[in-house]
Length: 402
Image 1: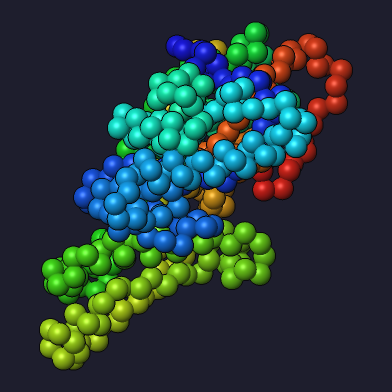
Image 2: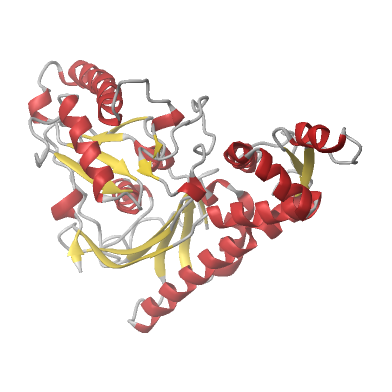
């Protein structure tokens, strides 16, 4: 067991209540060849990574002659300027670079090399005086999610000695952490588990589905002709699989859970057909994936997450935690009504509340500069709050469910 606050809780030197600037999406990570593909689409990601071994913020390409550290350093330097400008305005010149405690959120699967590069970039940006400075903390995404939740927990009535679970789903991993708030207002991590692969498990299912649709022989020959197009296919798929409607009328299905279908393009498939035999085959360079098929593709990873949650809820019950106060869903799967609905149907009688997309949580957990975080509040006990009107029946649209 370890008190997270000793490592990750930020100082209140800046006097702010927290400012979230949209930043990194999978900051940078060494990727094995079979996953050397572009990052998932998200707002602002309009470029694709051409390097085979590195993903960079927002899919930005690394210019020739520059290092990853230099590019990230320039990016951080610009963000530091924005942060200091905003804070200086709010606090009338009392904030300087020297009295800001920085925290950068990194992917859960970040390697030591990734962390080292991130610190070097921060040093180049002038955020910290030296690479190993304690003025910079690198917080894994699940830890950042827990911090974010506890910082705003006064809205969600989190009491002392109550447990909550954070589930963070990324492409490569599924991370679950169990937390409890201590009487002193610190955050105690009771358990953690990392399972791999994450949402990329659906990518593998998708490739098998494509292979079956166009025929194993044609797919294998296409891949032999154009091996460099496989990352393009995965990138197109990852772009499409996150286009889940957010509002009625946005091409959604009748029950508002999934679109009726998505269209995925096979790069240069027709070129392969023409080169092979003049285009005599009835093969197309795009096809539709139905809503029902989408659910089938994601069923293995959804079941994997549900099993993980169930295991830890059972363990908590055996330890005397009969009901967990909150279940917090973050990451890629938390964007989807289908996944949230599955979690809700399975666990609504075992947890008090289920949260997803809380406040600016996803922006933070995707990788934002996180600073000036206020000290954690002194949480009221049940007895202290017995006279208060319960808000458990209230629901904030898009952020929680009771």
